[in-house]
Length: 171
Image 1 (cartoon, rainbow, N blue to C red):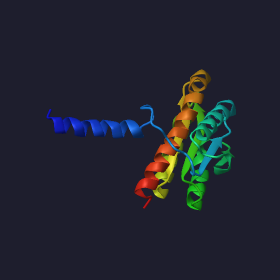
Image 2 (cartoon, helix red, strand yellow):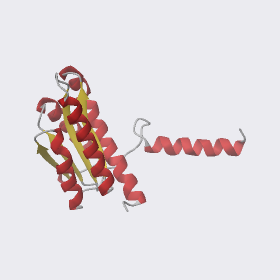
Image 3 (cartoon, rainbow, N blue to C red):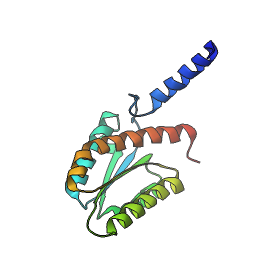
């Protein structure tokens, strides 16, 4: 590799490191308006997801006044609430918080697939940053093991993607 190539590669690596969670990126949530939509079903897990997400948003500079927190019955209701919030134009980012634990029937797959598809559709249709933190687990223990980290991750994704869309424009 030539010296010029190394310089370019170093710049690219530096750009990636500056923009990707996990690389220690310095994310800036100041001035962003974020809405959290929490499914109440499996509330012991979704409460912890919401608390972790909110704490990380505050740590990243989003002010309490710029965080809206709504609840819906379950994961299947998340897309409709997210769609209404996205259509309002009041938010830079949305976060879906939920927990679906496998039972003995096919209902688990339906709920997981349909809620995920609806959440993705809202993000794409409205060109809005939307972090999907709906846990899909085999049991409660798996959900509890992931609830804090996934809440934090959701906040970081919301801020990073909101900044990216603001930089490049939503349209």
